[in-house]
Image 1 (cartoon, rainbow over the protein chains, first blue to last red):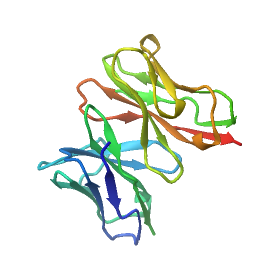
Image 2 (cartoon, rainbow over the protein chains, first blue to last red):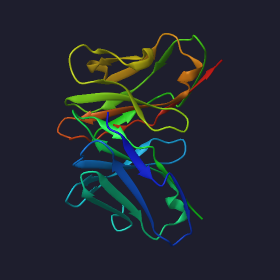
Image 3 (cartoon, rainbow over the protein chains, first blue to last red):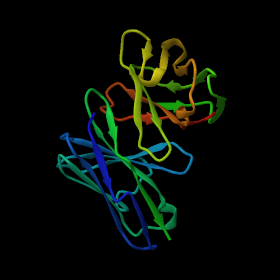
Image 4 (tube, rainbow over the protein chains, first blue to last red):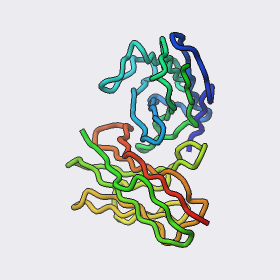
Amino acid sequence: GAVVSQHPSWVICKSGTSVKIECRSLDFQATTMFWYRQFPKQSLMLMATSNEGSKATYEQGVEKDKFLINHASLTLSTLTVTSAHPEDSSFYICSLGGGPYEQYFGPGTRLTVT
Amino acid sequence: AQSVSQHNHHVILSEAASLELGCNYSYGGTVNLFWYVQYPGQHLQLLLKYFSGDPLVKGIKGFEAEFIKSKFSFNLRKPSVQWSDTAEYFCAVRAQNAGNMLTFGGGTRLMVKP
């Protein structure tokens, strides 16, 4: 399967600041990437689908102005959490769509907002 | 929209015990079904998947799952668990025409006692 990396793996930021999380596909050109968040002891919740060269599609209840997604190339998608608050603290995971109908997951980024 | 439920949130077993984790989904159309595993501190990995054909699917590490269409179920089984199977297990469903988008169940945390 494809190799997916995320950077940073863990970030601590102050409330009100913005944080950018990168998701890279190391050996696969991904036209579609997915962003999930996972709260402690809970399942993954899809936040948005990131499409290369076009606007991301956000799931219901996810604020697109707060969680900015940019998928500028076939190997990189970024998620920016703007004006972060403590309730945004979570584990953010990206995945890319492989074939057929598979997803390859990154290792996740743990965001802690103080 | 489809939903996925995993009935067992926490399971504790002794080594060599048999395992069965339940997964039910709600969607009337054609689905693809997946089981993912997340070992402590690691990213999601695909255990097995069902697309079509034989409803009994064999995956890695001795796991298997059976798709029972009439029951909308895709239960995961392993005849004899090992301590190294301690992890969280997620069932996921992809509905027809949903592209690569997956809907995850709430997860089951398995602890195997040595």
